[in-house]
Image (cartoon, rainbow, N blue to C red; front, side):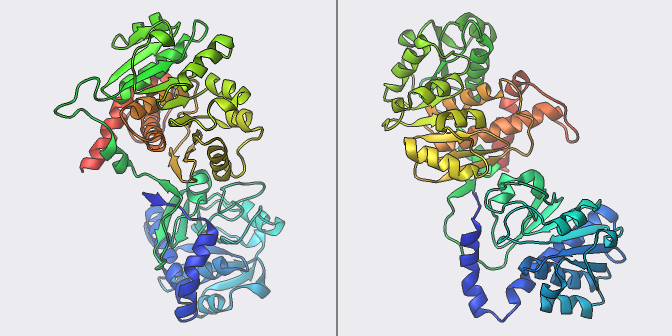
Length: 482
């Protein structure tokens, strides 16, 4: 698992090292790692390190000191380094002296002084900074065309929430020290590639974690020697309708593609579902569906009285239940149906559905918002997005950063619900099933968009994503075996 730590925890972990190590040791460790990544980036982008040009954007805090010391290390490798000081009187003295001694230039920050660097280091603000860039810094950043390496976090992006409410840096690479911070997974488009520099911090287990792809592949359920279609899990799908039959097709299809057990469908879209997936066992109603190990309810099923009655019946069982789409609209009217439910319950809203459930959107602090809903209602909550969050009622959160937004297309969420429901029927806990399903779904979406090759992608569809689910699972399982 990759762990992400809020800034308060990181500062607490730094405190004993700052108290026991010689002054400046921790900063120089960080700066040396930063300089190494910057040099690697220069070589990858330009073919060399010596003779290249790097500009430093230097604020008044320790991140400015990290940038200055890194500039000194780069200067010793033959890089021409210019530090633009946003507050010359408060610039880190030891770092400034080190850069000056190495032959670097220090000048007041001004948009006209940015020049034509090959690379820029963003050391404007660090993990203590909040809010957008100030006008002087924003004016300088606006003139930059070179790739930016952010020091610890991109300036102007909230390090704990990833929120942006004004001018901010967009980095090609972010070099972080000691631990990954929430911003690195919550605002991936601002951070670019993230590189971790170990500076010797000792940290407790985190409550915000991401499962690595190989870990997902290792736990994905596949048939064992003694398995049959029943022992691998039977999932029930209540989705789709005469008006929206496609939702039933996509949801049932996601379940079929995810595991090797059985899928039972209950609803009025049965003929269309069977036309697409003849292996599904269909019934006209929930009461006639037969035995299952988990239920998926909601996509395209409507919000009328009949749908509400069926949801009530589904939630009255002692089985795990995933509620999505129209089911969430029904729950927004009757939250008592799930509050305090003993059996595992997973809600899978996007931001708009989250607002219907709670009366407010999850932004800007999505992690706190999803934790609050899970704790208040006593359920698991999967909040969709490029960085999908899956919260336990106890506050633990899985995060899945998809690496892109190819799955932002109509019907993709129906496929995801079917996949997760099938994993729950196979015995996975709702949060782990959500994390595993979200990862495989993201890989399937990326594969659909790119045609299985590297390079640029093209807009894709839910049907194409569904078709790529088996290939995505194979890819994850191959990572676990390599």
